[in-house]
Length: 152
Length: 152
DNA sequence: TCTCAACAGAAAATCATTATCATGTAGAAT
DNA sequence: ATTCTACATGATAATGATTTTCTGTTGAGA
Image (cartoon, each protein chain N blue to C red):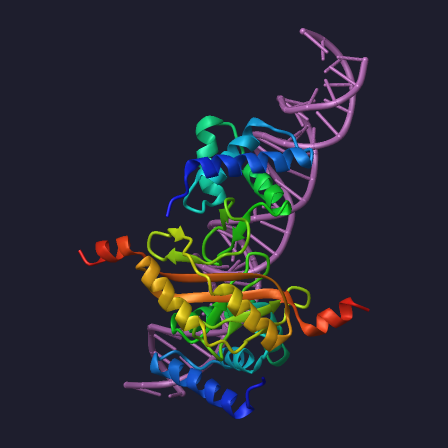
């Protein structure tokens, strides 16, 4: 369920290379934002990343975090999960669309293994004639841990 | 693809009955909002409904539309589709979760026929142990009409 | 080391949505 | 039909997440 940290290092360096490719500068804040994004396993919000980065660079502005996240979005290297009732959450590990399961109580977000989504997409294509470019498949409910604490 | 208007009348009266059940008042603005919501086939935004209602009642405030939509949400009689980059869209015809296909060019939203979502939900339940309460299954792309106008 | 476009930080602006509150009115009681 | 009162409306202010703006700073190539 948890990715090996070697993979995370690899992913982090992939992002660094992307920045270099596009000739963006390596500033300490920017690097710290990348690290925070990749090494967080909670699908962090901008606020989450901001607090993380502040521990190392206390003068960091939240605008800087927003700008770096927007940059990664433009590069296609981060997946943005928007919600109407809370701030956006981000996945810099798997920037491509994939399903999520979200706990409505503790706001935990996990990535389930689902193989059927491509079939769904094919079905949609055939039935509607749409050219499908991305998708969002989210399930909302109560995680096992919160179910237990509820029944106390 | 388009529902018969008899069904829409039925749906409209269902909503009116819900209001009566819960002893909410029938104001002209409120009724107009219900009509606009049910009879629109574009999954309208609050702004869309507001403009529609204004044609009949020019002094209507957008706050009134927001409040009526919130009321229907509380009653479980409207489905809210939130987006990070545009205003929420609403479906008062089918208030339960169901898949959508969204054109990124013209912002059209349609309801495809998909039978596989319950299977997906069962799979998620088994794999994660979550108690699933709702879901959001959206596909984003270019509709057939916009594909044509693109190639001109 | 020097130079300068890109960047960081602070604050203001934006946008959708929600809250507030004075006035108006639906609908029950008279 | 008239009155009454709680609820609804409409105008506006507040909110919260995000974006933009502006000014001083800095990464990194010459």
